Each structure stands twice: as C-alpha cells, then as structure tokens.
Image 1: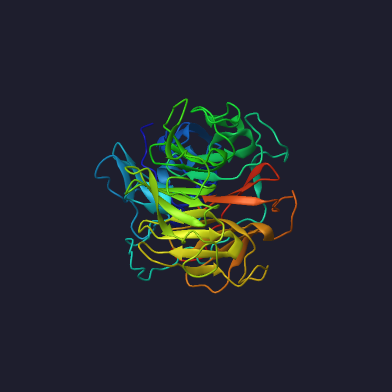
Image 2 (image 1 turned 90 degrees about the vertical axis):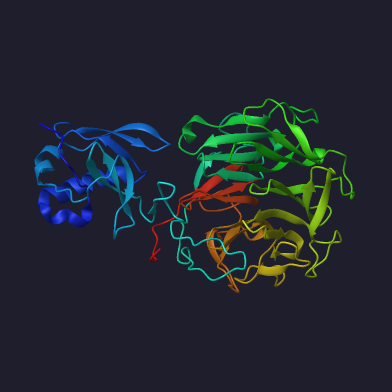
Length: 456
C-alpha cells in the first residue's frame, strides 16, 4: 500500500465516525508534549515520532485505527517544500510537510504556532517591544495554574547532597532555550542542572561542589544564578562577595565582579542576592542587599555603577531597603524585590527613582500587600509574579493593577502539596509553567499552567 496523504485535524472530523475515533486516539498521545510524526505508514500500528530539538525519537501506538480511516482523509494543503507551515484560520495547529505530504499537527492546549521560531509557544502574538510602554493586549490576564504543586526535585523534603536532593536552595533559573533548570544549591555550595525532560535522572553539578571555599573551583553559599543563551553560568557567590562566571563545561570559574571583600566601595559587593545579565548589551546587573543598591558592573574599571537606590536604606522613591531578586526587560527596565519595604519597584533606564508596581502598603497579607518579597519575574505581557515569602504565596499583578491575585500557595507554612516553607525564587518555562524554590523544604515545586481562557 502506498503512503497516503493524511490530515489529523479534529476540525475536519465529520469525514467519518472512524476519523473522529482516530483523532481522539492520536491527539491524546501527542498533546503533551508536541511530537512531529515524520513517518506514517498506514499498515503499521506504531508511528516513529520526533519532538523537534528537544525530546528525541518516540514510538506512538494508535491501536490499529490507521488502516480503516486512511482512505477517507483528505489533504487540501499544498506543500511548497519540506518543513513546517502556519495553518490559516487555526493558530492552534500547524502543517508539517514531508515528501509532498502535509500532516496537521495540534499544539498542546493553550499554545499557538509561532511560524518565526517554528515551535508551539505562548508568545506568538506578542507585539514588537515598545520601550515607551505602549499598550498591548494582555494574553495572560486570565491564566491560571494548578493549585497542586509537583515536587520535581527533593520530593521527600529532606536535606541531601546526591543528584536528587538539595540543601537549602535559594535561586533558580529556567533556561527556556535548552529546557533546563539551574538551582543555586546554597548549603551544598554548588549549582545543580536538571533537564526538564529527564528529571528522573537527577541533577548534575555544573559549578562548585568541591566544598565551601574561595578557590576558583569552589563556591561559598551561592544565592542566585543566571545562565545565558550559550549556557555560560553567572553565580552570586555570596560569602565570597563575588560574581563567578563558569563557562559551559568548565571545571572552574573566573571572577567577573567583586572579589575584593565585603564593603561599601564601588568595587565591592556587600551581599549579592540577585543577578541578571542583559544579553543584548552584555551588561551584568547585581542586587547588593547589604548596600541597598543595584549596580551595573563596568568590566573596564572593575567597579559597579549605581543605577537604582542610593546606597542608603529607606522607603523613598529613590531608595531601596534590602533588595533581593531582580528582573530586567529588553528596555533595561529593572524590577526589584524591595524586601524590607515589602514592595516591587520598577526602575526605568536612566531614571533617578523608581515607582511601586506591587505592594507598598506596608507588610500584610491583603491583596494589595506583600510581606518580605524575595524574588520577581515578569512575563512578556508585563504581568509581574512575586515570591511573597512571608505570606507563603506567589502573587500575580497584572499591568497597572492595584492588587494582586494568588496563583500558587496561600495555604500557610508547610510541606504539603501547594504549600511553601521559605519560598525564595521563581521562574517560568516556555509554556508558562511556574517553578518555585523552597529553602526549608529543600525542594523545587512546579505549578502547571492550565489551558488559556482568552483569545490569544
């Protein structure tokens, strides 16, 4: 039997009752994650499928329904060549063309096809970045997350130093390009890397892990981590008052900021609790908790340039008090978890003072309040996600909102599902799933995003 042209499209399921049965069986197997079925033989009950660039080859069994429906499927799309193509009037699926045959591939629930980068993603409709903050539709306004967190690392909540345990983790970084998560495993003095597609294999140590110390192959109480697009690792080596750069595959690091002891000098770092690298400008930003300031490091002078805060702790618009995690957007606007002021400050590039975009109404648990926020993340729609540590919750503040909504936690201090003990850091993957580190539970929880309820 010759290869047949197939269209696996639920919207065209009225061709026959058998097609509906086929689609349900096939799409159920493909919906999580996205697969690319490159070889489809009507006489076989198994399909060799490949997830582009991420998961490798898998075999999908469809229960023998192919042969009964193959002759009834109609392909109306003409392939210009091999590759992936947008499907007109249906952004939630796409065409995969192979040897002149078009296959309709569904995106996982809530995602849309991005023709430019050729993946199912959640940011297809993002407009061009406007640094003047022009209005844009908020495609995550109605997003929700599962209230039941999944412990992806440290599921028994116990301190440990093997590949599947952590010791008081603080910072984390989600590498969306390579589907990895990096954890500042603070009390183990190391950085652990976990493949999000192979969590069962445990983590590998990619920096430190040689005991606490100040040698080039050591770390001492790392608190934050950032990984660039080339998988180079920047580490806030807190007790050594320095920022270490470990190139991909390196067995030791080099000091790229600080390293001159604890102090208030511009060439010194008091206590670094947050770092961020603006990769377009190759700029390193450091949140200096001890000195109540955010600095942009000048590698030529080996000094920091103060760009937020004035070095004197306070609650005025030009001050910070115990800044922790930071996030920086494409326009070099800085979002700062201003811990002791229980607020999130937004500091535009070259501004002399910040504006409060979350909290700022004193410590508390009301919807318009925060209590000792440790970290902040901002998505591409300018929604702000806050690790509201002492309230044991994650708060989401939409642009221009006067209060936040709880999207994870809020169930008190504890080690149960959906509870937190000293949550410290947050990250989002490409699908919008949320990852939270917990110091006292020695774990990382993932909160899966649910299907979108808006039109994006």
